[in-house]
Image (cartoon, rainbow, N blue to C red; front, side, top):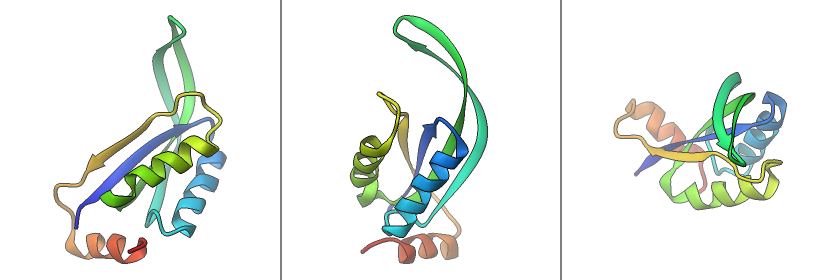
Length: 105
């Protein structure tokens, strides 16, 4: 069983909470953790931007990465969305089993 954390930035914590509820409801993620405010500095249209955003981390099975990316891109208000998946190399066994049991087989 390979688990991942997928991070997604968004315009505000409410939008990300709704998206997390959608992913958890569809059993594509076991949970979502939201950091309500992060400061993002990035280059866009050849300008350096400095904006406040929100940050979502969802925990799921590796096999759901593609579907989470697809659903996020379809619903997200941004043109280009930060969606990064990181493999979990080690986890508490009970937590890992809960994530596995909570997501679609």
